[in-house]
Image 1 (cartoon, helix red, strand yellow):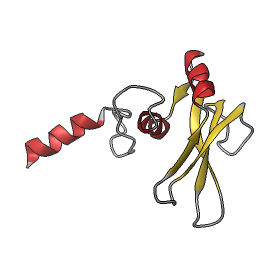
Image 2: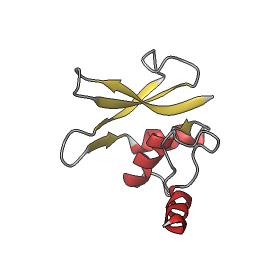
Image 3: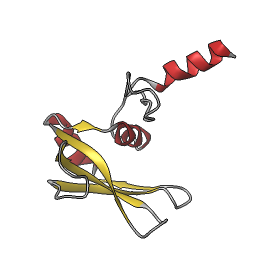
Image 4: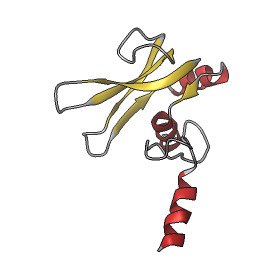
Length: 109
C-alpha cells in the first residue's frame, strides 16, 4: 500500500518534516517515491508548503494519508473532509473522527 506520511528532518530538538510518498512497510527515513512538501511546526504560524496538484494526483491513484497528514491537508484546504483523531490512545479505533471524542467528553462532564 502506498501512503503519504511525514518524515522527520532537522537538528536535534528542532524538528521539521517532509511530506513523502512511500510504501507503507518501508522505513520512514528510507527512500521515498516523491517528496511532496514540507511542514515546520516550530515557526509562528506553522509553515506548511505542499504541492497540492501532486498530492491530489497521488490520492487519486489510491495513496492513503496518515492521520496527521490527513489533518494537515484539511487545514491547508487541499482536501475537504472532517479531521480524524490522530492520537494513538485508542488503538482499537484509529482514525476515528475527532468530533466523536469531543461528544464523549461532553457526556462525561
